Length: 202
Image 1: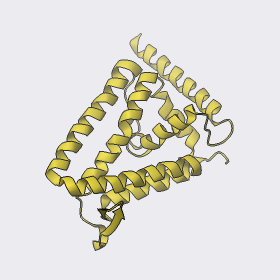
Image 2: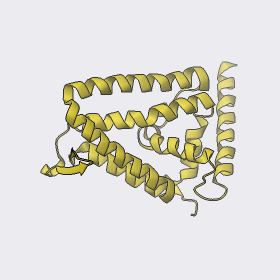
Image 3: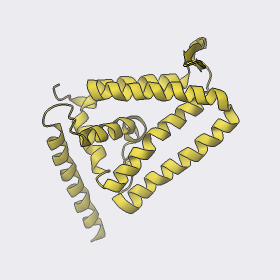
Image 4: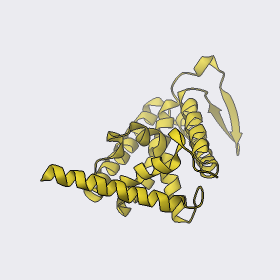
């Protein structure tokens, strides 16, 4: 695979993300929190109306019936999946598959909990996960979250980057030399940020 340019330049995006997530504890917190945030968001979005009056689709899994609605939750899953595959076909396909699992399983849970109980579950999980991430940045990373500088990083790319970070720890690279180039960019960006902070302090 060749290096992409423009918006789908995975190298630059991942370096930007990595510059805000260099502390191991902060990375671990994000690995535990990012996907539950996406999952519970889909859980709540299950209760949004169907797009273009599309009929629901019934899926049977091991004797359990799952009613899938083609609503905003489905659209979000589709957008995330397409973006992830476009960034990197191999890791992106895995991320897209996980998004699909999240959509199907959240639909199953939401249809059984009902809106009022699902809302309470979502609220608790979202509060815990977002609080954990802010603690990770404030106490361990000692740097504000990336969402303050790039909202798309927080809400669109973070689940994929967390997965890619886990795959990278086991030796995966989208293409040869990816990790080395990204690490060099991360170090350069962190040094630039530290220099700016030192200038402001002095």
